[in-house]
Every structure is written in structure tokens, then in C-alpha cells.
View: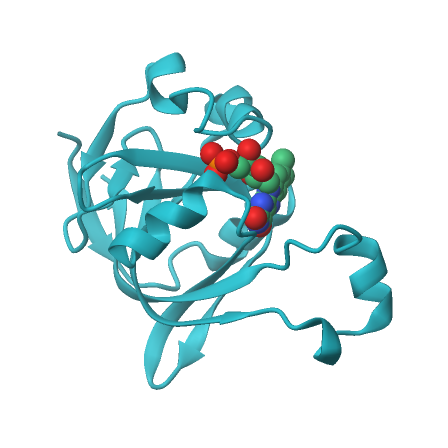
Length: 171
Ligand SMILES: Cc1cc2nc3c(=O)[nH]c(=O)nc-3n(C[C@H](O)[C@H](O)[C@H](O)COP(=O)(O)O)c2cc1C
């Protein structure tokens, strides 16, 4: 198992946002049965709500990962190194319904320290989160230009607000 140290939730914040907006981050989750999945995310927010450090992620109901977060109420956000570029691209274009993405790329994972969902060993730092709130993007309160640009076929995102229980970085 990989050695990691705990770091503040603000760890390398600007770099995390840059990667989110560039290639994307890796959102992983495990069901209570132990099965795991991973997908790429390009949208998300880290901040403070209810006096808690929060990582909010937006997941469409059609994503296989959605069921995993719903099942366990947990997820991890894993920041990929440049070497994981091909894996990140694959996770953003292939569903876990058709392929075991971890197995296909021989990606090692470890259970989180504060959650049961897996974390990705090759990622330099990871956020472990437990859902404290979820709500759906509503078309009636959304700007029309966003509806036409992102939701022509519906499948509106659910926003999962994950309390950041810990951030762990490779030593
Ligand atoms: C760069 C990038 C960013 C993405 N961001 C998101 C996102 O924030 N939310 C989302 O629901 N899907 C997002 N996707 C799409 C999912 O990663 C993609 O549909 C994936 O295959 C879902 O995998 P799954 O079905 O195994 O969960 C993104 C895709 C790419 C390539």
C-alpha cells in the first residue's frame, strides 16, 4: 500500500483547479459490496459550506459512477499525474458498464483512510469525501443558454457535496 501523509484541503489548490479545467480529475467510488468504478470529471468545486471543507462534484444520472456514489454515499477525487493522461482520457470516454477501467490499465488502488471508496495509488494527492448534501440541477432555475449548451437531451447533473474528511499526498 502506498505511503501518504495528510495535508490541508487547500493543498496545491491552484494546480488542482488547473488540472480539473485541463485534462480532468479522476472521480472514484466503491459500492458497499466492494465493487469500484472511476470516471473523469471536468467540473467541481472546493470550498467551505456549513463550516465544513467541501468538494462538490457534478455527475449525470446516466454515468455508471452515479450509482456507486448513491450506494455508498462516498467518493474520492484523485489528482492525476501527467503520466496518467491516457487513463484519464479513457475514463472520460468509456463506461464501467462495458469495461473494468482499473483492470484494463493495471491501475493499483487502495481503500481510503477515512472512506471505504478506493483511491488511486499513482495519483500524487487524493481527497476522501462523504456526501453531506445532494441536489439536482433544475432547468427552471438555470440560465437558458446553459440548458441549450449542456442539456439538449436532459440528463441534468446531480451535485454531490462531499465533506472532505481528509486529503492525502504521496510523500
Ligand atoms: C474532460 C472530461 C470531463 C468530464 N467531466 C464530467 C463531469 O464533470 N460530470 C459528468 O457527469 N461527466 C463528465 N465527463 C464524462 C464522463 O467522464 C464519461 O461519461 C465517463 O465515461 C463516465 O464513466 P462511467 O459510466 O463509468 O461512470 C467528462 C468527460 C471528460 C472527457
